[in-house]
Amino acid sequence: MSNRTKLRPQSRGSAPAATTPTGRRLASLALAFALGALLAGPIGAVTAGDDPAMTDEVAQLRAEEAQRDAAQIVDLTAQARQVQQSLVPVLDGLASAVPSGGEPGPLAAGTDVTGWQATTAKTVEGFANPPSAGTGVNIARSGLAAAVRTLDIAVDTYAAALAVPAAARPQLLELAGRQRDAAVATWSTGATQLDVLNIDAGNGHAHVFLPAAPGQDGLTADGAPEGK
Image (cartoon, rainbow, N blue to C red; front, side, top):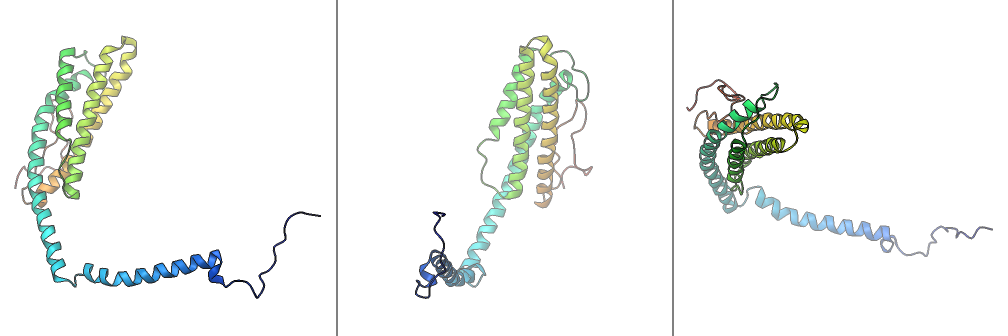
């Protein structure tokens, strides 16, 4: 004979459903729903704009955010132009050492690579601790910051290639070139967003792109003239 206890149907004298675990859960849900309905009334009234003071405060906050972002667009554009000028020599050097889609060129001098590293490290630091801004500005700044970090890694990879035996060097050189290409492409994304922000802010076009190769124009999103 099995030792398993048989389940018996609930008798008419059993406890009410509310005292069972399932009943208690249902009662708790009902209470939470009722409290939510009571609280939703006043909160919904405020967020719906029935309170003139709240409406004025929201409008003031939006105006302050718009003014803050307008100033940051100008500052970020100036920073991007400065970074662009500082990175062009680094990109020119990498283009000679690891041409995009071509065979590696002559090895760069160690002192040149050390200078590249100092430049990219400085640009990375320049994007640290960004100020609070709206989504559009954050997207542009994040794209530019990601680009300079990637270029900084590319330079470090190239420096590592100089330090290994010649047999292990080709893979590192190829990797440095791909990282450089990714940095230029990522910068173009952030620069395109920055261009859109300037147009929307009434500043006109701001083309702050990095060149894909020495002497070439940057990866621009359009052929519109600079400025308004």
